[in-house]
Image (cartoon, rainbow, N blue to C red; front, side, top):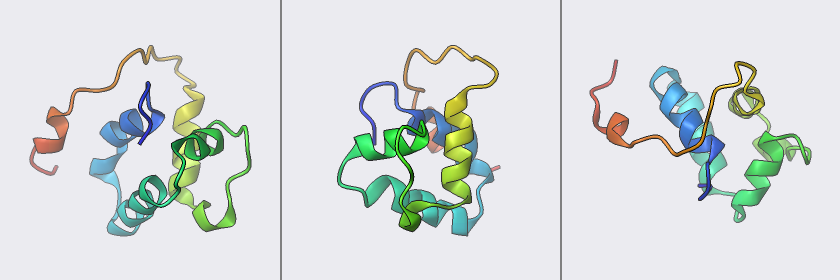
Length: 88
């Protein structure tokens, strides 16, 4: 996953709990298969087109999240305690 102010970690904190099993599998594939995290960054920010193999509703969600339409201040990675919370 990205190492500096990752859109994926912030995206995960806000979205993993509401994803379907299919979406979780797509997300897992997206963050674990590409060999270069910068590729995911470029796809999420639309600097480069997303390859067909990774184009999905999850990638669309990540692109939308990355646009930060609410202009939230995202200066640090989220704390990880949310990973240990019981599912909602």
